[in-house]
Image (cartoon, rainbow, N blue to C red; front, side, top):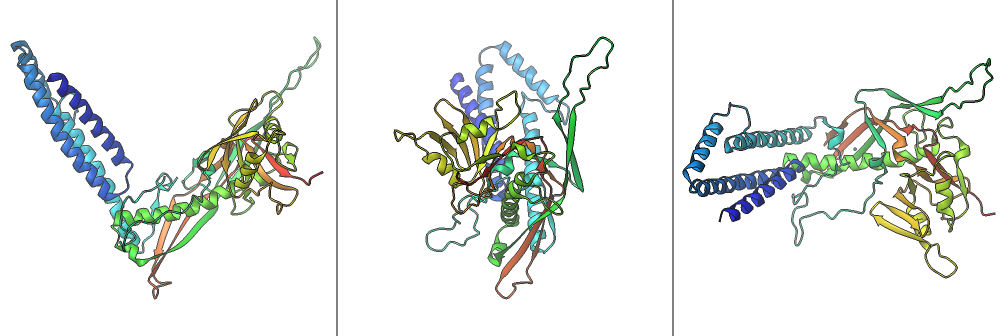
Length: 430
């Protein structure tokens, strides 16, 4: 009986821990409250099981009863505010703090949703945004139930995960950001007994990242305001966040640089990305992956951990390359927007799809066009200079019942490692 109770207690405690973790990651007020109720039920069951265990253990002898009484005395004597991990009094205090934390979170979302409905500007911290974190509304009722369904079917993914791989740096309130990098280290040399020592100073450089304003504008039916405040602000956050991320992840590749623009990998300055590191390819064939891998990095190492950023059409072109006996040369393992390309006896290279990359395999892509980038994605740095500001207006399309809202964020970006990427350029077929 005692063993069975201990096993049951363990299961209940594990279930409680899982619910706590789920509650931390939820942005739905209904789900948070439901989880809180489930935790309260589990706490009652856990306390009841512990009481039964104490009764069983107490019936085993007077010594055990004395020990139990001593433990209970120490538990009751725990100073206020100090948690006793072995007693239910400490657990009750922790539960109160957890409940208070959940209530604060709900209050924060309620307030923000109300402010949006009052046409007031609100701020979302960067770590709140859909991966600038993905937000789920659960089964909330944005779409009023018609006949069979009360949910919105999502579209296909439109945001490359490249933005989640680069080195994002929070610099709230900053205007610009400079990053130094090493070009090469010095090299020693022979010297006569009375001669001067050989100069071996390292060569360095730096890049500057100025802030650029990325904005998004959207309209939504006024039926959405019937959502609870928590879900309403989460919906606005999701839509604006996706739009901003969609633009930013493309600019990491093709950003023109200069005033009010990120500098993309394809347009990185020559002091950090000299043109002699570019690779020219006319078509994707059996040797393409080897050319890219061996063309990246310094003279002493074959670098690992680099990603190939490319268009989906070019990934398909890799998959279609066959040997003379008709067998596929490249193996493609994918996981949504990412995966690996490999071939027998060669390398397994991680890839990321980004639609901003022109397709080298497409006939419409002109020669001398950069089409792919291969390198250390952390070599691209993206300072974030502000939280995401969101405002709402109901004036523009009042007659048609549309709510307009806009969001903005100040960010920068540039390659910040010498030859941190190899760019693959399409050339005309010989």
